[in-house]
Structure formats: structure tokens, C-alpha cells
Amino acid sequence: MDVDKCQILVAGVGGQGVLFATKVILETARRQGAPVIGSETHGMSQRGGSVVSQVKVGPFANPLVGPGSADTLLALERTETYRTISFLRAGGACIVNGPGIDFLDRAVVDALAVRQVRVLHVDGDRIGREIAAPVAANLVCLGFAAASGALPFAMDAWTACIREITPDRFLAKNMEAFERGVQEAAVL
Image (cartoon, rainbow, N blue to C red):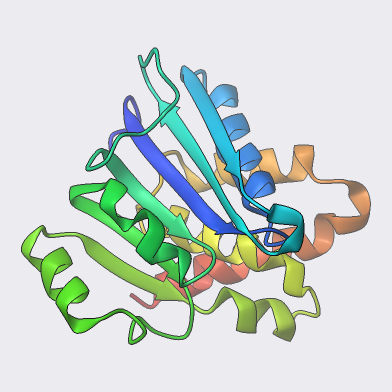
């Protein structure tokens, strides 16, 4: 992925940590000296409604990612993939939180294949439960996306940022969750 210019969408529902994952992306970019802007859309997020964040790294003037422009879609909720998949560009990457991509309609999978969109999945929810931190599934997915090359910047930049912005009481679990996501990507 181009570190100097990329567009990222993070999609999920209220309570999944979309905004924290986005904060990590924004802060990691900023700490690497990259120009970065972002925007977020909240539906009924407190009641499990859609939450979508948009991040642009590089020389952009507008924070909104247009349809067919995103390099990466990080879908923390599988069903939110359908709402936001049209934002992916040909050749982009779609990272889905779930045990597989079987939930996607075959026609959608075929259309993405034609556009050479790389679709990967990681079961962040399962891993979050395994480490006794189900709310850290967002960091499992973020670690997976970073290690799979779907997000820019070196791994040490990600971990340094997480260490610095995570409240102390959540730090051990957040770091464990991120590392488990990295480990999942290593078996690709």
C-alpha cells in the first residue's frame, strides 16, 4: 500500500470500537509525519446502529472517501460490508471481521474478484472472547489489516501508537488483541 496516499474506511456498529480503531489509524499516520484527515458518521451508534469512519492519508483537501475510491475497507461487522463495499476501488482490500466470507452473496464475491478486490477475514470476535476482551476485536482486526499489508506504516509504528493512546487499564488486552491479529495474518 502507498504510504504517501491512501484512503481507508472503517465500518461497524455502535460499541465495536470503530472510533477507537480510527483514532489509532489517524494517530499512527500523524506520528509518522503523514498528512492525514478523517471524518465519521454515526447512525444510532448507541443502539448498535451503523458507524463509518473515513481516513485519508496524503495530500487531500476533503475528508470524505468517494465511491470506488477506498484502498481499504475494514469491516468490524460483517453485515456492514454490504453497506460500504461500493466505496472500494478496483484492486483494493476488504478485511472482514468474521469466521469466513461465506456470508457474502456469491454474486458479490464474483464482482469483487473481477475488480481484483482482495477479500480477507479474521475472526476478531472469537479471538476477543478467547483473550477475555471481546471489546478488543477491533484491535484484532486492525492488527490483521496492518500485518496483511492492507494498511500503511510499519508494525512498530502501530504498536507504539497503541501503547501511547490506550488507557493503562486496557493496554495489556489491547496489545494482546493487536498481536493476535498480526499472528492471524502471518498464516495467510
